[in-house]
Every structure is written in C-alpha cells, then in structure tokens.
Image 1 (tube, helix red, strand yellow):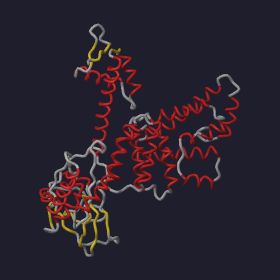
Image 2: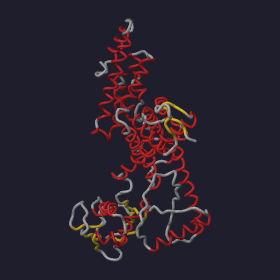
Image 3: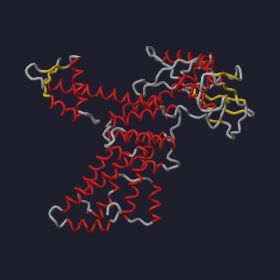
Image 4: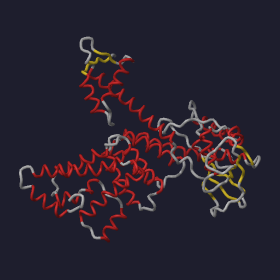
Length: 471
C-alpha cells in the first residue's frame, strides 16, 4: 500500500490495527522499514550521484502529491513552486493515515537519519554541490521566494547529515570560486543561505564563511582607495584574502608580463603603506583578465590569468609548440594542458591545435585562429577555474581527514585535561558525544596512541586500561 500510495487503505488499516494491542507498533515498524528501503536504494545508487539531491526532493514531492490526492492543476503549481521537506513528504501519511501519531513522526525522522548516512560523506558533498549549482545559476530564473523555499528544504535534508564538516569543506571551496570569479547569482541569496546555516549549526560553523564575505567587502573598499591613489591606464582590482578564512590554494610561480608585474608591485607598495608587517602572496590561478583581441572583428575575451599568459605570447609570433609555451609562461604542465584544451578544444577555439584532438603533447603546435563567428562582443572563454579537478577533490578530502584528526586530538586533550584520569571506554564514550562527525573506535584508538607518543597523556602504571593526563 505504501508502494502504491493507497492512502485510504492505509488510513483504514491504521484505524483497524489501532484497536489491537501491538498493531500500531507493527505498522510503525513496517512504515519505517519502507522509508529506509526506498531511501537507502536511492542514496546507495552511485549512478544517480549527479541528481541525488534533486531526486530526493522530487521523491518527496511525488509522495506528498500522490498521498494528498492533489488535482493535476494544483500539482503543477506545487511542482513549479519548489520542493518539499522530509516533514512535508510524509505529512499526508501522518495526517490522513496515521493521525499525526508522534511515534510515526519519530520513526520517519529516524528512518531519514538512517538512510542518508548509510553512505558516509557523499550525501554531504552532494548537498554542497547542489547548492553551488543553484546559487551559481540563480536556480534558472526562480523568484526570491522560491529560492528561499528551496534553501529551507535543503537545510532540512542537511539536518539529517552527520558529516557536516564534509559539507562545510566543499561548500567553502565552491563559495570561494563563486565570490572570486563573480559567478554568484545573488549576494542576498548567498547571505541568506549563510544565515540559515548559522541558525542550524551555530556561529562557530559559519565563522570562516562569514570571514570570506568580509574580505570581499574590505577588498572592494581597498580597491576604491587604490584607484584614487594611482593613475592606472588599465583597471586593476585586487582581492586581499585572509588565509585562515579561505580554502588552501597551491602557490604557482609563473612568468608575469613586465607591465602587469609593475601594477602588482605598485599595489604592494600601496598596501604595505597602509598595513605594515603583513605579507602578500599572489594567487595567479584565481586571477581573471579582460583582453581585447583582433580576429576578423574586434572582440573582448574574459579569460583566466593562465589563458591570458598563453594568448599574449601570440603577439610575438603566431605559432608556438606546447613545450615553447611552457618554457615561456612557466605554468605547471597539468595546469597548462587544461588551459590549452580550453583555448584550442572548446566551443570557441581561439587557437588551432596541430594535430587536432583533445590530448595535448609536448610537440603539438598551436596557431592563432583569426576567425570568430561569435555574435557577442565580450566572450567568456571556457571557465576552467570553475571546474573541479580530481586533484582538487582529493585535496579537499585530505583536508577534511587532517581537520578531523586535529579535532579528535583536541577533544581528547580537552577531556583528559578536565578529568585528569579516565578509563578507555569512558574516554571513547565522551568522544562520541563531543565529535560532530561519524568516527570509528579504531580511529580514536590511533589518535590516543599518537598523543601517548607525544607525551600528552600516558597509561596508568597499575591499570593499562586507564589514561592519565600529563600537564
């Protein structure tokens, strides 16, 4: 009956079994098992990762529509207005079938909590990616109210996720790209989502995310001051980022053109005149430039720093090999391959690659392509910066792993400093209560052994199952 959404039959069954001694307990268990089965099948299907969050929300939409028996025209209105929360998903069953029985409501919540966490970390990552796509695209013309409703529904899903630090890591990395590359559809929507996360998880969870917005606002004011201070012939804007707030970016040393290097030095002198004792490290991998290009017609190209360094070489000569480009720009090989693919193998091919093909080799030749059939005057070349590479993903996962180790170590030291002496099992129990992410006892034991080796604590001489804190 649950499978076929027979609400009337479910209501009759509820009324019938409620008259028996253990009927409601059995019905509740069957109901919970069904929710777990359907949800787990959806979460564990790796082929549906790209649409998992949307599928979960759509499943809820379908359930509430079918069980409430909405007419077709009203269904279409509800469908286009947004998604439904887990509470709304089973609301018709509870209201029409289970008479808002609190035990059924709790069984529903426990079932969602179970199946969303049957696949550790992945749902948290996918929810972050889902919100990135919505905040980046503006949810395809959705109104402000619809966007707010969607964020509320996603927050309810987020509430069930145990590995919230995984969500934070991926969300922060995607938010950084949206802010730095100007791809955020609405600053108000961004801040609204941040406010909802803060309300859900507390101020400590969003401190670094709020710091990112503050950096952007301070950089904007700094840019106005720099513009008044200098007489630049080109528009030169700099975002100064606090390292503790933003994701970790690998520093890349590249060959900057002399005229651009001059602007960098000019800004550094201006910045240090206002803030002594600070250091600046240029992150060229995040920079964007606007170039004017002479094709068969004049166009403006919005490109990354690496794309710009390559294109500027073609002012010197019209044909370069990959090896020559790498020597001239000093861009790391894998990054240069991505850059060349975006320029010579994308939709708009500013360069022609010889021989043709997507694979880049050292002896491949690149020639300037003078033909441009694009109607727009200003063209954004394929945004390789927005695409997450396998290396970036592995780096994020490694950062999560390291951060969790630090959190475990800090929790152990904090507990032992308070308790001074504690049995192994009690320490493990305390850690499970304090840590906000799922962890295995064997991992906790490894961190305890590590702290013993570093002499933060030691085993009791009389009982090896008891730990003592070392001041």
